Length: 370
Ligand SMILES: Cc1cc2nc3c(=O)[nH]c(=O)nc-3n(C[C@H](O)[C@H](O)[C@H](O)COP(=O)(O)O)c2cc1C
Image 1 (cartoon, protein in one colour):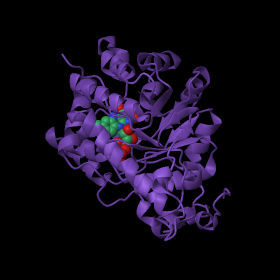
Image 2 (spheres, helix red, strand yellow):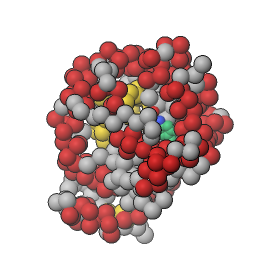
Image 3 (cartoon, rainbow, N blue to C red):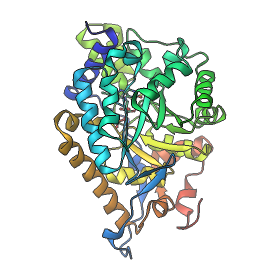
């Protein structure tokens, strides 16, 4: 019989495929981030170099597929398809929470398939913060890493999801200390990732102080876990959780804001995610200071089909990134990072209110850091 966690994971995939789980009124903030178009780019589009190095690994473009799944036969197929695509393209991917397979080793194959299909791609193992509070430690973290021969371990933070689901695990006491213990014990980078509500400067600094190597901000503006739980609650006629899902649907820090706050506060490798949907937005995340961008939900449907569909989706995003770089005259990721941008509206206002300086991005000279 499938466990409660396996059923829940299956529900999540089904809901994300069939229902609207994207932010409704909140936006990812990238509409406030403008490149200054260059009518004279003075570069050749075909010579643009998208390759980059992050976590000491070479990526053909600054793009990974976010943590999604594992634990069921359908999940295994999704993982296998994404892994094959990112291997062929020189990108990376995260697997979903490995708790199910740590608790039931029969399910390991649904995760380990990714290393079989992707012998050289950057693969990120995944465990959840609530499990750390409940007793998971270095041993379980190593089990997750070994299971997929991971290049990095992600510890996910999902307090929003936990407050809107009936079986929510709402104790985060001591989580930071546990994260620090794991970061010190592992010989691969530990990344702390949100799941759609963003990371603020204060938490980023706390995470840097305990020794994590990277942060995936996963801000609001894309997939909403309150929305996913709203749909689950509706099906089970759980009126209070349905209401919480509705009320907290758009909760969180917009992705653009979170990337700016975090990159201005810590010296870590930063992954930008949460509603990143186009190559223009990928370019904006890099110019705001991120090292990699990550997309999750846009890859789910193609991954239920085949490798070709996943590659097609990722190739379009990469071509949009290349087009953007052409239009701003940036022929490498290094140059993209230093390109001036204009921040307006709520994003600029938020940053100013919180003591950051949005105008620095516009004053930046190509070739110089702000
Ligand atoms: C079906 C599904 C399952 C997910 N499962 C996990 C998970 O197990 N662990 C995790 O860290 N993030 C998980 N996520 C969150 C994503 O990695 C990502 O942070 C979030 O969806 C925001 O990115 P997006 O707007 O591009 O979808 C999941 C997302 C989806 C859509």
